[in-house]
Amino acid sequence: MGSLTVRNLGEDIKKRLRLRAAANGRSMEEEVRLLLAERAAETATEAKPRAKQSTKPEPPVRETATRRVLLIISGGIAAYKSLDLIRRLRERGIAVRVVMTRAAQEFVTPLSVGAIAGERAFTDLFDQASELDVGHIRLARNTDLIVVAPATADLMAKMANGHADELATAVLLATDKKILLAPAMNPRMWANKATQRNLETLVGDGVITVGPNAGEMAESGEAGVGRMAEPLEIVAAVEKLLESSDARAAQNGPLAGKRFVITAGPTHEPIDPVRYIANRSSGKQGYAIARAAVEAGAAVTLVSGPVGLPDPPGMKTVRVENARAMLRAVEAALPADVGIFAAAVADWRTAGDAVQKLKKDASGPPKLELIENPDILATVSKRKTKRPKLVIGFAAETEKVIEHAKAKRKRKGSDWIVANDVSAEGGAMGGDDNAVHLVTAAGVESWPSQSKDAVARQLVARVAQALNGKAT
Ligand SMILES: Cc1cc2nc3c(=O)[nH]c(=O)nc-3n(C[C@H](O)[C@H](O)[C@H](O)COP(=O)(O)O)c2cc1C
Image 1 (cartoon, rainbow, N blue to C red):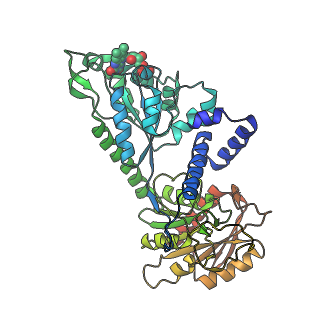
Image 2 (cartoon, rainbow, N blue to C red):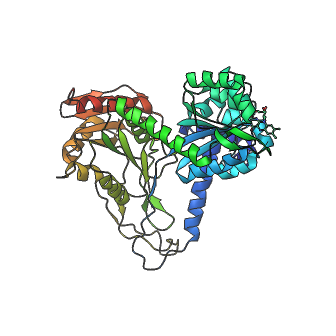
Image 3 (cartoon, helix red, strand yellow):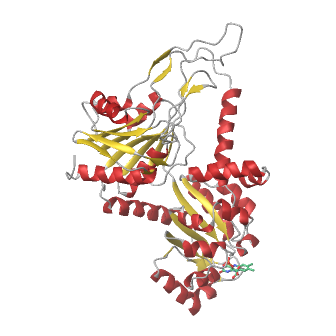
């Protein structure tokens, strides 16, 4: 669906879409999918009349803990079981992206694989659209784990010898992720010295295997060791590997064992069923901090307002719409060692939530009465119980940035304020770079303009120092 849509667009729109996708760190297809999903959600809201006299309906809160698996299907008779494997993984909240070898497409079609995976299967190394769109290097890296199921004797031989002659082998050679192999082949092929030699090489290279099992082969009258492990066995191996990679990060990083709650993005405060008050926050800085904290070993709950960014891997993401829901989600995530409040929470919301869409009529524009939203930073900073040891707020200022940030730190009772200039010249809102000042009790540190990822890593390193008593 995504690729069809992209192909049919005019060149100008394609170019704008490519730029937007690149700016958001997504593929063009992902961008199209998100745009379509957003539009569908809006249409659904517009179409659905609200129940009269409803008290303000709460927008849904969606929680996910996204893990990504890249499944490579090679050309064995057991390829049909991969369809069930995809379904089982997705049932467990694991996102599955699929690459198929040429031979695999003789056994199952990319169409059925794509339908079950929820996105098209990738098949061709030299397909210009997919190379521009995602590319084999991104396929190889943007995942938590690579699973090859079924793994044919041929693919194992190519892997053992470092071939990169088609998309699947190129991805396997380019990856820095763990690889789980589920071999499946005729028992004689499995027992063959060449296959066993290749297996030994692969295991020596750190590849992990599940199966093959002993039993009846698909070919009539054949039995022995060579049956692909059952989908649920493969799922169990996947879950174990995903957990152990989290555990490894958590054990080794400077923030091992620390719990973080981080907010990101804007909030949408409803005016009526179709309109809302919002701001230009993209969520990029908060998401970058959450990723950096996970990389440093922290257990992170990311509470996100409505943004177009995918759920980052390795953490719990709670999606909310408005300030009140954000505060509830933050409080539910306590106790935490560190709270970082990077979301641009709307200060005000409308006093009444119109049940029906406000109509343009002769009486002129409606008067919107605004009331204050809960102050998440101040509420958490001033908690008597379960206050995080370190509470960090963000200040978005358009003038007198440091002065206002110092005042904000005192007023809200937070430990630190990260102040950024969000004036049009500052370009922090929605952009990829940020120049921030860290305001603490000890003074002000002005950091150079750098990418939001670099700001995130520097902030997380500074938090680790503070928690380990090496800085204030
Ligand atoms: C009907 C049929 C079934 C096959 N089943 C298997 C199999 O289960 N395991 C295997 O290693 N090869 C099997 N092969 C051979 C592979 O399809 C062949 O080696 C192919 O080149 C593998 O390509 P790939 O590794 O790039 O997917 C089968 C071939 C056919 C015609």
